[in-house]
Image (cartoon, rainbow, N blue to C red; front, side, top):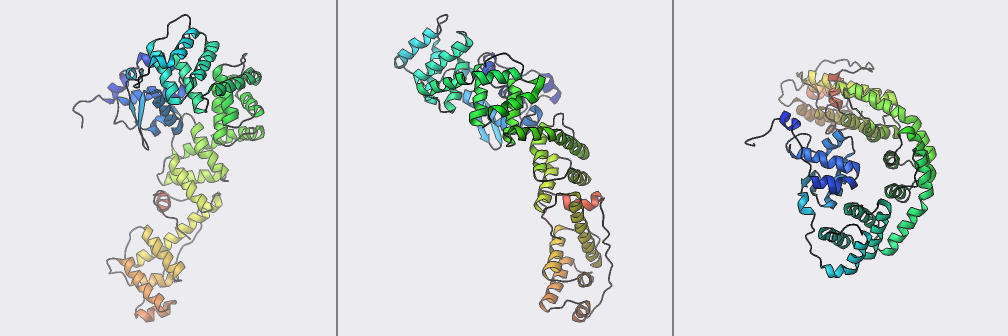
Length: 481
């Protein structure tokens, strides 16, 4: 335990310092979500023992998929300002930004004499610093980018941004292109030709979004990603842009296409159908949350990760509400818990309200019969998983009816392990092929009374009745009925 520590109120009321180098050199050129993750991570660094100090909690608070949190930290690791110690669970160490500005490896300036001269000519209004030269050397070395290719990338960035363009921006572009295998002069030349070829269609897309432009470098990179990496055609991209209406920006369009991509939706027709039932999915998400007693300000993640998957598996809307109600009665108040229940029912082939109610009634009827056996043995305890397993063996495997099982239970009234004793009695009967009550009484030279079983169909279960079926969805074994 720490000798001294802040109260939670002090931490919340305090200040999270952000290095000016980060703001000046990294923030302007980093992806928006990466900046959010980095700054929130800085905040969490002051609370190492907080329950929110995990990838899952960060993703929930920032309303981002966990994968985005991981990829954001991977981006910052590439920039050299964090170190990913472990990916499962995610553990990140924040490094000193000042120490990352100068690469560890030393380079001989004469090796890059021609590169240096041509680079300086691209920036006639200022002198290139030694550190900036080293950053270019380091990137070319680690990313295996040819000097001629790097100069061509720098020239392109200057043409777009002017001579005041900062080198972190240029290096970010170079690293991104290197990931796509663009490392030689001819590779860069081909990529630039692709950019020029996209001007017309990018202009049309931006016009739909309410902008008059032929496309910036970033916007053209987005388009190349959508078409080359994700596989969308121009018609699908423009259709998605039209759906954004007045809220359209290139980043919102990227988010929309990212959602379609992860849901395997690529054509205009599929996008149109998805848009039509999207409202219904949000309504289902809202209602399920309400039933189990939780609230989320945004439902995008829930719709994508849960509701859409449930509907793709053929679940009826009312059946989902039924499962949510049963989970609530069983004190399961999380979406993950509901999803576990849905998954288990799906494996059993139960995706309608009627089939679920019928299955639960059979389970309840089974437990009522087992409870009769427990009472006959002189006990008033609840039904356990082992009881269900033994009862299944006695009925399904050995073929005994309820009367013989109840009779055997009456012989165990003074036994410490009653069900173990019943199992031994029935095992001997099974070996001797005794399957009627009269044979059993003769075999054991004793008698017992019979009890009637109530098998009335139910559709509204209490929490006590549901607990055996929903109480532990992680460990509870499927019960065959």
